[in-house]
Length: 125
Image (cartoon, rainbow, N blue to C red; front, top):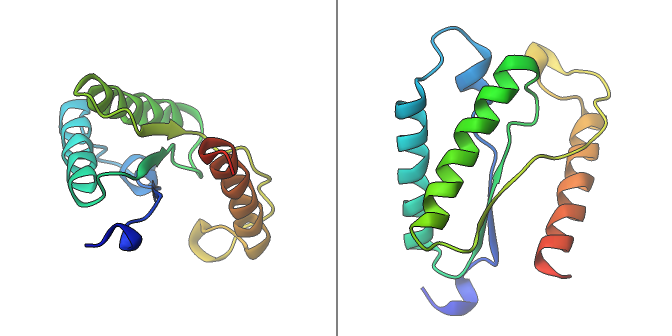
């Protein structure tokens, strides 16, 4: 791909369903798969900043476990020399739910505004 076709950042928001139901993945399984995914994204997007969001709708032990695992995968990529990968926990206002515990329209708007603000800081926009 031409440089003009390459994104400046890639944002990942994975893990909510992995940790919110029974049968959560083991640390080895999850961190290994996440590292592999990050390496694949880096291969396809060599100049992009990769932002690994901490799952936005988790809480309690599920959130703590997911955050720990994602931060371990990001740290491993950094140790491997990938300086343009970060983890990020968004701070937003939870304003109701849609169906099946998905975010409401207002919550999506709050999440989008929070992500936009964080990307602007991260990218120096």
